[in-house]
Image 1 (tube, rainbow, N blue to C red):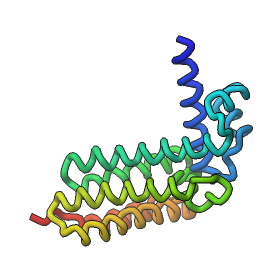
Image 2 (cartoon, one colour):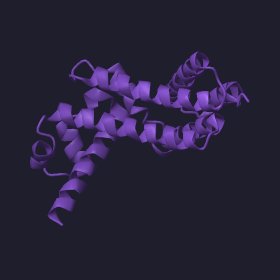
Image 3 (cartoon, helix red, strand yellow):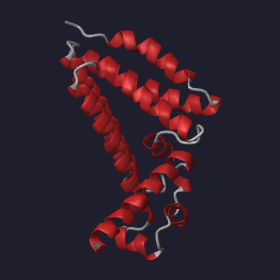
Image 4 (cartoon, one colour):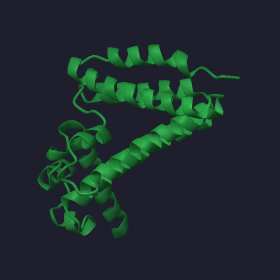
Length: 191
């Protein structure tokens, strides 16, 4: 029972770090901010994250990256890349409206502000590569030639990430709708 409570505390702290990263960027993820947001006791930081703030931030980015990777993998298993992109766009639209346009992509936030967290740049690169690889694999499975699938995967990730930024700036979901309308036809199955 105690171990389960410890896992819940660690998870609350990671969830708080993800949200703070999405809303404030890497600089906004401080130990004090995570403790205040999660309600965790101060001693739990060094119990769960002996590497301190950097370990906590990397854990948060990894968790967020894994979550989106799982979404891509699950949608790719269904075999329709267009549906995959529709699901990703729907996820980000829900996320943006739930947070009143305050929270963007944590991997993008870390990519923009990783200089003070050792290993962050490598982790973020790996996360984006996984997303692109998953989309490219799904496109290849839908009949796209490998190099074209890789280029389209880059376009999909870049367009969605850029649209998230524009949605936040404009406080409007239109950029995600525009991205979906323009890239969806490019992803039709090639049989």
